[in-house]
Length: 187
Ligand code: GAR
Image 1 (tube, rainbow, N blue to C red):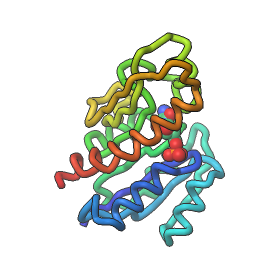
Image 2 (cartoon, protein in one colour; image 1 turned 135 degrees about the horizontal axis):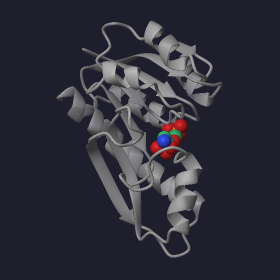
Image 3 (cartoon, rainbow, N blue to C red; image 1 turned 90 degrees about the vertical axis):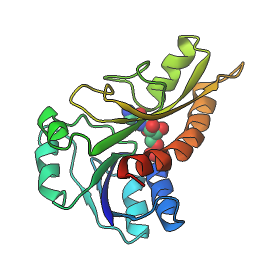
């Protein structure tokens, strides 16, 4: 059985998808042992509703060192599921190969500092991109630059807005996130 820790900052629909796909057997031999949030958010409620231990560590300069203290030693994978703080380089290096992130765009485009959530979708529309999508990648000290595990794209519709794009990307995320987790776990 592989032990997963999930980090969240927001509504946690990707966390929910991970929990559901574990329950449904789409992700096998794995369990979420802990959910950590860097702010009050609905993701924490989802953990509680699923009887999973959850911890709030307020975001800020001590976040990564506090996080290190609460992550169980037997953790096999740390999953950033809509997590918005930047983790310290030492933390990323300690967990290299065992920490992954989902990003709402086609990396290496539209990644890096400030590129999160709706900011990404606004930037993609403003740039007149023909395609967008989602990427699951390994986390390294360089923001959004780690090796790509899975990516899926689609054509942007005429009249697409940041909001419609966000909704379509969430659907893609729900599809590729469990697959990427299986891949990293060797399932
Ligand atoms: C997701 O679209 C995820 O890709 C994005 O935040 C959203 C969280 O949704 N992550 C980032 O922008 C990280 N740079 P959720 O809370 O419903 O899972």
